[in-house]
Image 1 (cartoon, rainbow, N blue to C red):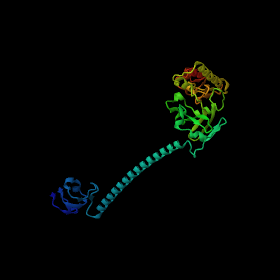
Image 2 (cartoon, one colour):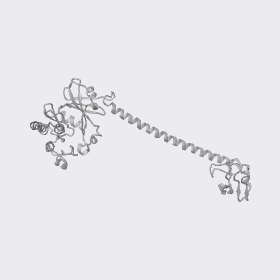
Image 3 (cartoon, rainbow, N blue to C red):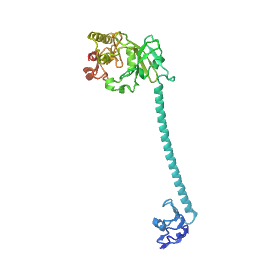
Image 4 (cartoon, helix red, strand yellow):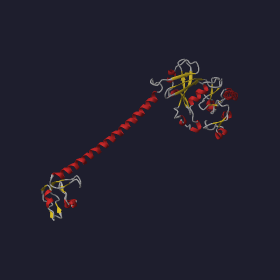
Length: 351
């Protein structure tokens, strides 16, 4: 048993490897340096018996033993130390690369959002997105004149299918331009949902119906234009707004009964034309006061054909995949039996 603590001894521990009968050793608080001999005694020594020697190996229990005083054991431990250092370097590189990838991903997301926002801001005049224009009447204005008018100050209404603008052309003519919501937004626009608005393409429906019909009580469709991201529909401007606004927003100046009768008669004539004179017949599916526009002389015009159906098989009572229309205006038999009939339009008109 050998106790050498607190004696300021120096050097390495290789002389202790020849003491085969040594059972207990305390060399704490000296100035020993280097590695520990690889034998049973040193492997069983408690840490307290080695404490206080600043120069002794401190890389870990398994890495601090040498098999003898020769250089083989030291080389082995140096290899172990080198491997440990390489592992630390690899771990640091992995962490660094992970941080760099996260930062690059965030920058990519920010750039993508800026690009989308830039596309939205530039859709009304982007030179890279060409506009297609199809007129259905003889027009004396250009697409560029229409696009200049699509600003917030010219908004006169919003609905399930899009935003409605008043556009004053250079020739003094006023028209209405409906900018449709993107296809993915139509069902979610404002308070509109799938059941109320239906799953449909408003642009195709209005072009297909209004582009091929003419009647004094149906709004005149002027044309349509579109590019990669935006779809516009153009109509005659009605200075008196809609029947709904006349009935509910004219404070202290209600419509006279004779005028109301003339408006309802004109709307009924427009419906009769859609149901009985058009081939194939057309079911509007959303007849209501706000979809009947009022002209300068209080003549009525049926508008908003975004939900219209062409019944081309000769059977009005055909099935529909979805219930379309506005709450409070949907006929009971249409809602529960999913059948499209001309009577559904008559019901909504009377409501």
